[in-house]
Image (tube, rainbow, N blue to C red; front, top):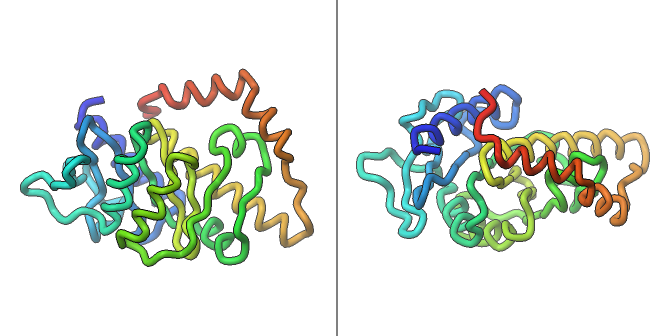
Length: 222
Protein backbone atom coordinates (compact mmCIF):
# COMPACT_ATOMS: atom_id res chain seq x y z
CA UNK A 1 0.00 0.00 0.00
CA UNK A 2 1.14 3.54 -0.74
CA UNK A 3 1.03 6.14 2.02
CA UNK A 4 -2.02 7.71 0.39
CA UNK A 5 -3.85 4.38 0.40
CA UNK A 6 -3.03 3.91 4.09
CA UNK A 7 -4.40 7.40 4.80
CA UNK A 8 -7.63 6.52 3.01
CA UNK A 9 -7.95 3.25 4.95
CA UNK A 10 -7.42 5.08 8.24
CA UNK A 11 -10.11 7.59 7.33
CA UNK A 12 -12.54 4.81 6.45
CA UNK A 13 -12.08 2.86 9.67
CA UNK A 14 -12.07 6.00 11.82
CA UNK A 15 -15.52 6.84 10.49
CA UNK A 16 -16.71 3.28 11.03
CA UNK A 17 -15.55 3.39 14.65
CA UNK A 18 -17.71 6.46 15.26
CA UNK A 19 -20.69 5.14 13.28
CA UNK A 20 -20.67 1.91 15.30
CA UNK A 21 -20.45 3.72 18.64
CA UNK A 22 -16.95 2.54 19.52
CA UNK A 23 -15.85 6.10 20.30
CA UNK A 24 -17.63 9.39 21.00
CA UNK A 25 -16.48 12.97 20.57
CA UNK A 26 -12.72 13.40 20.17
CA UNK A 27 -11.98 10.08 21.90
CA UNK A 28 -9.97 7.17 20.52
CA UNK A 29 -7.06 7.05 18.10
CA UNK A 30 -5.96 4.93 15.15
CA UNK A 31 -2.62 4.41 13.45
CA UNK A 32 -0.99 2.34 10.71
CA UNK A 33 2.51 1.72 9.39
CA UNK A 34 3.65 2.95 6.02
CA UNK A 35 7.23 1.77 5.70
CA UNK A 36 9.18 3.32 8.54
CA UNK A 37 6.47 5.90 9.15
CA UNK A 38 3.50 5.77 11.49
CA UNK A 39 0.35 7.59 10.40
CA UNK A 40 -1.61 8.62 13.50
CA UNK A 41 -4.77 10.59 14.20
CA UNK A 42 -4.17 14.19 15.34
CA UNK A 43 -4.94 15.50 18.82
CA UNK A 44 -8.32 17.07 19.53
CA UNK A 45 -10.07 15.97 16.33
CA UNK A 46 -13.24 13.88 16.26
CA UNK A 47 -12.40 10.78 14.21
CA UNK A 48 -15.36 11.19 11.87
CA UNK A 49 -14.12 14.63 10.82
CA UNK A 50 -10.68 13.53 9.67
CA UNK A 51 -9.69 13.66 6.01
CA UNK A 52 -6.88 11.54 4.49
CA UNK A 53 -4.36 14.40 4.45
CA UNK A 54 -4.84 15.15 8.17
CA UNK A 55 -3.26 11.98 9.58
CA UNK A 56 0.07 12.80 11.24
CA UNK A 57 3.25 11.22 9.82
CA UNK A 58 5.78 10.23 12.49
CA UNK A 59 9.10 8.45 12.06
CA UNK A 60 8.79 5.22 14.08
CA UNK A 61 12.48 5.00 14.95
CA UNK A 62 13.11 8.62 15.96
CA UNK A 63 9.61 9.75 16.96
CA UNK A 64 10.00 12.89 14.87
CA UNK A 65 6.84 14.39 13.36
CA UNK A 66 6.91 15.39 9.71
CA UNK A 67 7.38 19.12 9.24
CA UNK A 68 4.19 21.12 8.93
CA UNK A 69 2.03 18.60 10.81
CA UNK A 70 -0.41 19.45 13.55
CA UNK A 71 -0.09 17.92 17.03
CA UNK A 72 -0.41 14.10 17.09
CA UNK A 73 -2.73 12.18 19.39
CA UNK A 74 -1.79 12.39 23.05
CA UNK A 75 -1.41 8.58 22.99
CA UNK A 76 1.45 8.86 20.49
CA UNK A 77 3.91 7.03 22.77
CA UNK A 78 1.58 4.05 23.18
CA UNK A 79 1.46 3.62 19.40
CA UNK A 80 5.17 4.25 18.82
CA UNK A 81 6.36 1.88 21.54
CA UNK A 82 4.05 -0.88 20.31
CA UNK A 83 5.37 -0.67 16.74
CA UNK A 84 8.93 -0.67 17.98
CA UNK A 85 8.63 -3.81 20.12
CA UNK A 86 6.54 -5.84 17.65
CA UNK A 87 7.45 -5.44 13.96
CA UNK A 88 4.51 -7.68 12.96
CA UNK A 89 2.06 -4.97 13.99
CA UNK A 90 0.92 -2.94 10.99
CA UNK A 91 -2.11 -1.19 12.52
CA UNK A 92 -3.42 -0.19 15.96
CA UNK A 93 -7.01 0.68 16.86
CA UNK A 94 -7.67 2.31 20.25
CA UNK A 95 -11.34 2.82 21.09
CA UNK A 96 -13.62 3.32 24.09
CA UNK A 97 -16.34 0.66 23.63
CA UNK A 98 -19.07 0.81 26.27
CA UNK A 99 -19.42 -2.90 27.07
CA UNK A 100 -15.67 -3.44 27.14
CA UNK A 101 -15.15 -0.57 29.57
CA UNK A 102 -18.09 -1.70 31.71
CA UNK A 103 -16.66 -5.21 31.86
CA UNK A 104 -13.27 -3.86 32.96
CA UNK A 105 -14.93 -2.18 35.94
CA UNK A 106 -16.23 -5.44 37.43
CA UNK A 107 -14.21 -8.34 35.98
CA UNK A 108 -10.52 -9.04 35.48
CA UNK A 109 -10.87 -11.45 32.59
CA UNK A 110 -12.88 -12.04 29.41
CA UNK A 111 -12.97 -15.81 28.84
CA UNK A 112 -13.44 -17.55 25.51
CA UNK A 113 -17.15 -17.60 24.70
CA UNK A 114 -17.59 -18.40 21.00
CA UNK A 115 -15.53 -19.47 17.96
CA UNK A 116 -14.96 -16.05 16.35
CA UNK A 117 -13.43 -14.74 19.55
CA UNK A 118 -11.06 -17.69 19.85
CA UNK A 119 -10.08 -17.74 16.17
CA UNK A 120 -9.74 -14.03 15.42
CA UNK A 121 -8.57 -12.61 18.76
CA UNK A 122 -7.19 -15.34 21.02
CA UNK A 123 -6.46 -14.67 24.66
CA UNK A 124 -7.40 -11.12 25.63
CA UNK A 125 -4.99 -9.28 27.90
CA UNK A 126 -5.82 -6.79 30.66
CA UNK A 127 -3.79 -3.70 31.54
CA UNK A 128 -4.52 -2.31 35.04
CA UNK A 129 -5.52 1.34 35.12
CA UNK A 130 -2.69 3.72 34.28
CA UNK A 131 -3.07 7.45 33.71
CA UNK A 132 -3.86 7.91 29.99
CA UNK A 133 -1.46 9.64 27.58
CA UNK A 134 1.57 8.88 29.77
CA UNK A 135 4.80 6.97 29.23
CA UNK A 136 3.60 4.62 31.97
CA UNK A 137 0.65 3.58 29.83
CA UNK A 138 2.86 3.27 26.75
CA UNK A 139 5.21 0.98 28.68
CA UNK A 140 2.33 -1.10 30.06
CA UNK A 141 0.73 -1.63 26.64
CA UNK A 142 3.94 -2.26 24.71
CA UNK A 143 4.95 -4.86 27.30
CA UNK A 144 1.97 -6.99 26.25
CA UNK A 145 1.52 -6.44 22.50
CA UNK A 146 3.79 -9.35 21.59
CA UNK A 147 1.61 -11.73 23.60
CA UNK A 148 -1.88 -10.35 22.88
CA UNK A 149 -3.62 -8.87 19.83
CA UNK A 150 -6.27 -7.30 22.07
CA UNK A 151 -5.74 -5.49 25.37
CA UNK A 152 -8.49 -4.20 27.62
CA UNK A 153 -7.33 -1.07 29.43
CA UNK A 154 -9.12 -1.10 32.79
CA UNK A 155 -11.33 1.99 33.34
CA UNK A 156 -10.23 3.25 29.93
CA UNK A 157 -10.87 1.30 26.73
CA UNK A 158 -9.52 -1.21 24.25
CA UNK A 159 -6.41 -1.56 22.07
CA UNK A 160 -6.30 -4.03 19.19
CA UNK A 161 -3.55 -4.71 16.69
CA UNK A 162 -3.35 -6.40 13.31
CA UNK A 163 -1.41 -7.08 10.14
CA UNK A 164 -3.66 -4.48 8.53
CA UNK A 165 -6.36 -2.06 9.64
CA UNK A 166 -9.15 -4.40 8.70
CA UNK A 167 -7.86 -7.14 10.98
CA UNK A 168 -7.26 -4.74 13.88
CA UNK A 169 -10.73 -3.24 13.46
CA UNK A 170 -12.49 -6.63 13.26
CA UNK A 171 -10.76 -7.60 16.48
CA UNK A 172 -12.19 -4.48 18.11
CA UNK A 173 -15.67 -5.49 17.00
CA UNK A 174 -15.27 -9.07 18.22
CA UNK A 175 -13.95 -8.03 21.65
CA UNK A 176 -16.81 -5.57 22.15
CA UNK A 177 -19.34 -8.23 21.13
CA UNK A 178 -17.67 -10.70 23.50
CA UNK A 179 -17.86 -8.21 26.36
CA UNK A 180 -21.53 -7.58 25.57
CA UNK A 181 -22.38 -11.29 25.52
CA UNK A 182 -20.48 -11.92 28.75
CA UNK A 183 -22.14 -9.05 30.60
CA UNK A 184 -25.62 -10.16 29.47
CA UNK A 185 -24.93 -13.78 30.38
CA UNK A 186 -23.51 -12.83 33.79
CA UNK A 187 -26.66 -10.88 34.56
CA UNK A 188 -28.72 -14.04 33.97
CA UNK A 189 -26.45 -16.63 35.57
CA UNK A 190 -23.04 -18.25 35.26
CA UNK A 191 -21.92 -18.33 31.61
CA UNK A 192 -20.74 -21.55 29.99
CA UNK A 193 -17.31 -20.68 28.67
CA UNK A 194 -15.10 -22.61 26.28
CA UNK A 195 -12.49 -24.80 27.89
CA UNK A 196 -8.80 -24.49 27.04
CA UNK A 197 -9.09 -27.68 25.00
CA UNK A 198 -12.10 -26.36 23.05
CA UNK A 199 -10.27 -23.08 22.41
CA UNK A 200 -7.24 -24.91 21.04
CA UNK A 201 -9.46 -27.09 18.85
CA UNK A 202 -11.00 -23.98 17.28
CA UNK A 203 -7.61 -22.46 16.60
CA UNK A 204 -6.42 -25.68 14.97
CA UNK A 205 -9.28 -25.78 12.45
CA UNK A 206 -8.06 -25.41 8.87
CA UNK A 207 -11.16 -23.40 8.00
CA UNK A 208 -10.46 -20.86 10.73
CA UNK A 209 -6.78 -20.60 9.75
CA UNK A 210 -7.83 -19.92 6.18
CA UNK A 211 -10.29 -17.24 7.27
CA UNK A 212 -7.67 -15.46 9.37
CA UNK A 213 -5.14 -15.69 6.54
CA UNK A 214 -7.64 -14.21 4.10
CA UNK A 215 -8.45 -11.39 6.51
CA UNK A 216 -4.77 -10.52 6.80
CA UNK A 217 -4.27 -10.50 3.03
CA UNK A 218 -7.23 -8.33 2.10
CA UNK A 219 -6.18 -4.69 1.92
CA UNK A 220 -9.54 -3.05 1.40
CA UNK A 221 -13.22 -3.94 1.42
CA UNK A 222 -14.60 -0.79 -0.14
